[in-house]
Length: 491
Image (cartoon, rainbow, N blue to C red; front, top):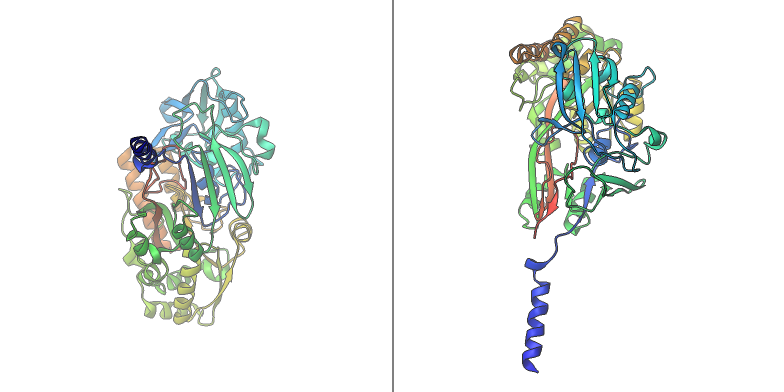
């Protein structure tokens, strides 16, 4: 009798031991911002891609965790006619989450929709160089361009270029249907979005069966949620002041990496005082970057002097050109007769903007520029500032990769104009030679710095927190994304 009890107890202990426990198959991620929509082809908010990119939707190509352009729904592609056309070979046996087949006609629909005259795509410029999109059979598509473009495979990797299902396009904003490893389940607005693994996925099946994205905008609440175990990971953690405490806790690991997020004090050149380069220069020299990085980001961030990431091989350090110099600011304000200037500073709800905005406003006031803050919710900022350019100053991180070309867009919310910059971007698009492209990118950075096009503050660091057993989350953010396709739990 005693032996049987002992054997039973041993068996129970073995079954309960961590070594034999089954790994979890669900994950809950924290996010600061709730997206205004789940359609990555119709909205500029990075929070959209942070949920659906590489999870729900896929494009012809994709960006990997190291920033490389990788095959997506196209298993291969070939440049033709000196880069004036590309032939994409599509993967076989791919289906949308509604069960319909993905083929060349879906590529035609997706790209024609993105570049149409009435397109609401926030990155419509990605598609402006396309002359035509023509099927070459059910699994082959030829994209003909107006001019050679060595960057087309990269452009097709953006979230704005994902392939969409024509049959379900009417409900894409609230019930997206894609070809990715996870399918949309439901959206409890104000709280969370739920995804589940798609059984019909063409690629390697994900280890996770479910994923929940919870919206926690308050930094204090984000810390509390991690400590209580209410979320498993916060890939972009909004409370950097608590990172040392989390790093010292064996339950967690802290992932510090890079992003493509140039954080800027944007200036609206269409506002009469800000059209004067002397005033923009005065504002730039009133800003102490280090004070902002320490005060708002607790040291996480790299100073920048133009709209370009420091980790890129073609980056040049131009921070000295707009170094903190309050005396120069006062002299330029006197020269322009702007001593009594009042400017409006519109701030979106992200912690870096709210915290940084208070410091920026104090610095500008100290230099003699009355600065009045308006705190905005995300949808309000997108509508008033981004779409309608109704602002003087704003603070925002531009997290899209290699987006220096936004300064060549005539209708972009900066209202920046410089024919020399436009010509530089046009030459960049037209060449595939690496050395020439590197030189043009350096020229572009210098033009923006010389023009004081905006006040370039810092490159946003990626500060993430996760439970120690989670593997596969991106440490760097070459694209605003939380790719869960290779995320798993370990014992």
